[in-house]
View 1: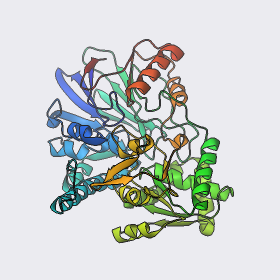
View 2: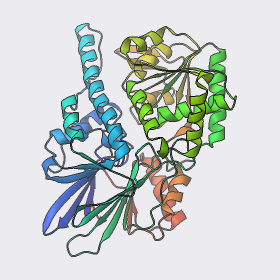
View 3: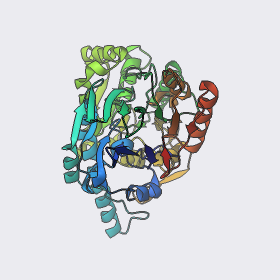
View 4: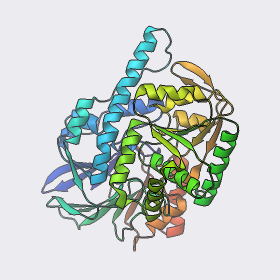
Length: 471
C-alpha cells in the first residue's frame, strides 16, 4: 500500500490523501478527502493543479467532514471524470448540500464583482478564479452515499469502512479502513480527519480507536495548548463589554459550519449566566443560517450542556435579540449600524463572503473590535489581521485597520497538543507508521517530536506534499 499526500502536508488546508493498493492483481486507487487550498494566489494555483492519476481511475472517495478545506474541490474532481461513490456521514451529506452550492456561488460572485470593478477602473490585484459551477455541485451531491456512525460497510470484498465520531463539527468523522491487500496481512488504516477538543462546546468528545497499523493524524495545534473555556469566556466578556461601552460594533468572522453555532451557544450561555447583558446579534450568512437550522435537526448529536442552553433560549427568546440575515439588501443595511451590534459572518478566514464587506465598513473605526476565533492560514486576510497589519486591500481599495483585533484561541474546534496526544493514547499499541499532517511546519514538527518522546512511537513521519510513502 502507498499513500501520496496531495495536500495538508506542511500546511493546514487542501486535505487530500491518495491511496494505492494491489487488489486481485490490479492496482486500485481511492482518495481520503478532496479539499480546497485556502490563502492567496499560491493556493489558487494548487487548486488548479492536475491529479497524479486520471480522476476516472479512482474507485471511491472517503470524506471525513464537510469543511471546505476537506471537501471543497470534490465538484472539480467529479467534473474532471470521477464517477465513483463519495462516502461520508449523514450529517456531513446534509452540510455539503449547504456548503458546496455556497462555495460555487461565492466563486462566481467574486469574479463578477471583479469584472465590474475592472470595467470601472477600480480593481487591482489577482482576478478571482471559478473552480466549478453550481451544476457540477449538483452532479457531485448525486454521487454521495451517506453512512451512520458505527456502520461498517464493505466498499469491496477487500476493504471495510467505518466512521467514528471525531467531535470536530457536526458529522465529522474518523475514517477507519480495514484493507486486505494481495499477499499481505490485513491492515487497519485510521485517518483522523480533524479531531475535536475534549470538553468543547456543542460537540461530544472524539471517539478513541484501539488499534491501527497506519495512522494519519492532524496537527493544526500540535505545538500549543488552548486556553481553558473559563479563560476564553472571561476574555470574550471583556472584549464585548469594552466595545459596547465605547458604542462600537463587534465583528466576528466565523466558519458558517461549527464556529457560528459555537459562538451563538457561548453568547447565549453568557447571557444566561448574567455575565453579559441583553445582546443584539446578527448572523449574516445564509449558509450559517441553514447550518444552524441543520444543527437543530441533529440536536441529539450535540453535547448535553449545549442541548440544555439551546433549550433555555427557546424558553427565553427575549433574553437576546438574535436575527438571521437573508437577503443582500438586509446585509447591506448592517453597514449603517455604528454601534451596539455583534455581527457574525462567514468566511472564517475572511477571504470571501459577506464578512469582507463588514470588515471593509468596520475596520477603519477604532471603537470597533474584530474577534478572531479560528485558525487563519498563511496568506489569508484573517492571518494578516492577526499579524497586526496597518492596512488591508479590500475590493481594490486600501482600508486602514484601526479597529482592535483580538485572537481568542480557546474557541478552536481542533484539539490542542494535549488533546491530540490523549486521542493517540487510545491506541493500545503503537501503529507501524504514523503520518503527521494538516499542520504548518513548526506545528507538525513539534507534534511529531511529542509523539516520539511522550508516546515512545518510533516511526513518525511528516510527509512532504506530492511524495509517495509505502505503508
